[in-house]
Amino acid sequence: MSSELTLCGVCEYRNINKPSVVWCSECDEGLCGECKEHHAASRGTKEHIIVQISEYQKLPSNILEITQTCPKHNEKYVIFCKKHDCPCCRRCVTETHANCRELNVIDDVIQNVKSSNALLEIEQMLVEVSGNLQRIRKGRQDNIQSLKENKTKIEIEIKETRMLINDHLDKLQEILMKELYAAEEKENKKISCLISSIQEKEREITECQTNLDNIKQHASDLQTFLAMKHIQQDVTNNESFLEALLKEDKLNHVIISFEKENTFESLLTALNKMGTIILDSSTSDITLTSRKNKQVQIMVPMTPVATIDDLKLTLKQIVKTIGGSVTGCSVLPDGRMIFSCYSSHKIYVMKTDGSLDFTLQTGSYTSHIHYIEDSQKLVVTSGIDMSITIIDIKNRTTEKSIKVGSWIYGIVHKDGKLFYNGYGSGLCVVSLDDDSVTHLVNAALSQYSSIAIWSDQLYYIIDDSVVCCDLQGKLKWKSELAAFLPDAEGIAVDNHGRVYVSGFYSHNVVVISTDGNKHRLLLSENVGIQWPQALFFDRKNNKLLVANQTKEAFLFDVSS
Image (cartoon, rainbow, N blue to C red; front, side):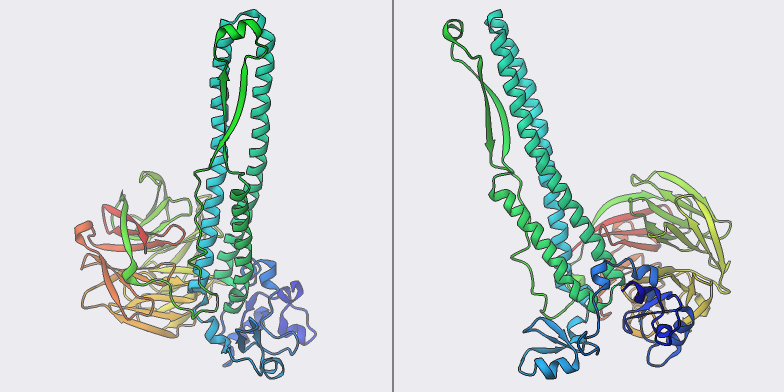
């Protein structure tokens, strides 16, 4: 598999060794720069989705090893047999599955797999198992702390008792103290050992979550579908580990206490012990969250998991913005917020408490922004200055500037490409490899408006309508908004494909369903929304950031 990734498959077939620069999941092979151009121009392959080879290699090795063709017949999988729980090529169906009744077209089975209930269940199971591990670790750490506090209290009692019954009990005191320390040390070792096991499990769950994020971003639908079973098995194993802890009473809360003898007279006469160190345990109050009764079967029909009717917004924070003409906003992974101010040529980075962290000066208009998490780069557009500036946010230095030859507003990034609102030039894309610009949609987009990306879909605004297209510019749906959302400008998409749009003159925010057929008013002037120009959806934390043109921005928790 490593050679298949690093060498161009087409050239290798011709006995030419050339390095691959992109990967086509549908062709299941790497392509060099020259073959990439032929691939994009060919009628049969121009609709295929390609990713940078460096991004594709981020997938777990077991995902990369999943083949999308039948190893026996070297033909593409076209059918999924539910009875045998396996994909089949055309010849497999004829030879070994002729009598199977539950045969489904594999394209139908994997449709919407990345937004399916089954994948969402796995994500939520990972979150819950991680939360369970964290709660157990904290409970064990609290137990260590309480043991120390118990020990301190008992030390005082022991010393007071020892003073009352005089010097001849010194030896007994020493014995008892050793017993106390030995008891605490023994229990500490047991609990510390358990914590180490829990931390290892936490690391495994974190790795699963990282792998799942990469799978969602870069794996093909088939790879995602087949990998889900492996990840689900890992989650099940971790849940069994947690259940075993409860059954074996390893989570019982250990308490040290001290019991003195009844009377001092008995101590002074025939006592050969000052007291007894008692180790007791009480049932743990830690409750484990479990989705076992909620899980859906992997092969149920794949449907979107949430609707716009399920949405609930809770205001979490009001941020006082600096400067005027806020046209772009974003939230960094650590919770800091970024606001671009068009007229002041500045970008303001705010701390999580709303105070100013630092300011960036770009030297030109600062229209819209997009943060690339993998490289920690901030992409800034300049409106009428017709350029893109790329800033290293960590070092606060400008990396490069790209002239695009048109007014430029909203911008997003995927797989080494920047998709942007070129206003009169339409929806455009610039390659970060060579700074070349191509046009996806030639119709003029709305001035000052954002664009958004989710999965393999782009969202943009044109004539007060929201349009959804694929990464090649092919229309998927269009939603007319002029009647209730004049001069739409901000646009963002959540984890389920629901689209949020702000109306500049109508002072509101509307959410649109994943198919573009329904809409619902979410926010209006009664919560402080006035001239809203910028939106950002924090998909990791399910938060929506809405920025007015001046004075204030609002951070909402989003739940379903």
